[in-house]
Image 1 (cartoon, one colour):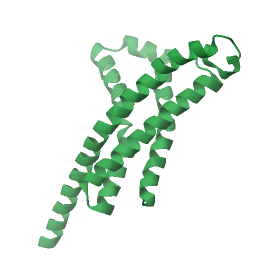
Image 2 (image 1 turned 180 degrees about the vertical axis):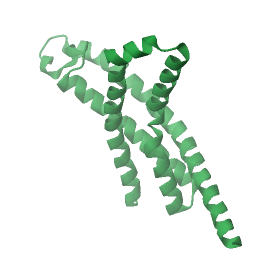
Image 3 (image 1 turned 60 degrees about the vertical axis):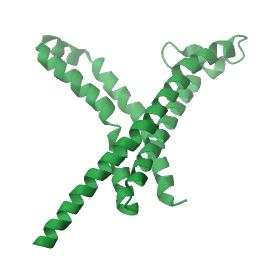
Image 4 (image 1 turned 135 degrees about the vertical axis):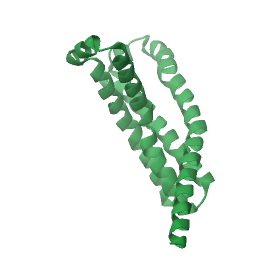
Length: 179
């Protein structure tokens, strides 16, 4: 296996943790009283625009690691299928680290309203009976849903972005050959 495939995995693993903090940043914007006061005084269209931008940032950030990985793989392998696979690997690895990090936070750092999941409570007689249903619903259920999305949408995004890159580079090559 070539090193670049491991690099795609590493990029995805790093991105999953970075995304955790990026979402935390976006959430903190909604908790800022000064921003909320300004938005409450703004017109409805401006508030709608802010919501659209925030949702776009929330999902659009996932294109940041995938598009460069797909384009790089297209340049290396000259294969749209390989580019699609690279995108799926990046996104799937990101899901593993995102939800793995989420689990570590739940167990060792604690999150609001989820203190009962802290490992320091593991000697409590009902710890594991309370822990497993919450883990299954909060972590496992979301992880399986999002990794499935990553394995379906990742190749589509990778294929499309590498295909666009391929078309652009072919047109540039034709222009250079003609001039």
